[in-house]
Image 1 (spheres, rainbow, N blue to C red):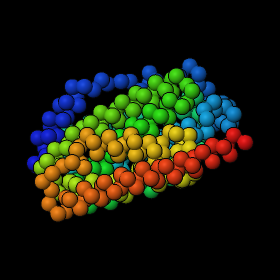
Image 2 (image 1 turned 60 degrees about the vertical axis):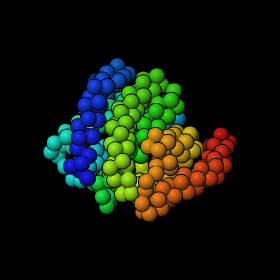
Image 3 (image 1 turned 45 degrees about the vertical axis):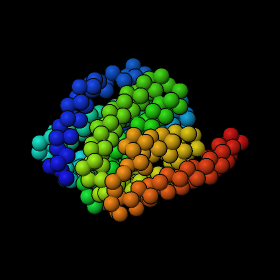
Length: 300
């Protein structure tokens, strides 16, 4: 599979490099508004009232940052399965270099804006990275299916975080990061489209497995459930968004539900994906009531 898809990797990498505009993370950090913290520099300790960001946006930034922090685990997982030679290796290293900007600039922005407790943030980082991340993908196709879905989900999470932060610098930064994630998604989506043509049954089965059990890579962060609930209630990322802006567009772009010529395994997986999309829509509708109650309580 890796050998057969390598020409696709080479072609899509060339396309990626042709449309990519490199950017400089330090230009998106409001350094002039930063202050020294307590410690060796004898600055001011962080206090909750120093953050002008809504609680859900703070939660989203922390989840986004800690997710990006775990890049070493993601690189290991992908490089181990795809290899570090040829076009596959060139892509993995390029992707890693681009992704590495995100954690660096997000942490600098959070510190400069005093958007979250830096001590608690560092303790969370140490805890999260010490645990690492194990995708437990059984095949390389599962790996490709997961990153295809995850990159689009991450794009939406970053973009919506910026839109709700009420800070034009933060919004510009999150839009910049979301643009990176979108190009990464285009690469993986294009590659998965070729995989569906070359290995239709196996690719359909891998996608069915990934969609049915999908969770964001930051799900292992300490306190993730409570933060994710506030993020969902605020409309930053929830089941509605996952269904309408991630799953449905991907299935449409890949032609998953209309693909013909499948064998029994592929047909069963195709039917499973269709059922999952419908169930996800129903779950999202039920969750809207929960979010409404959460928002009502927060305003009382």
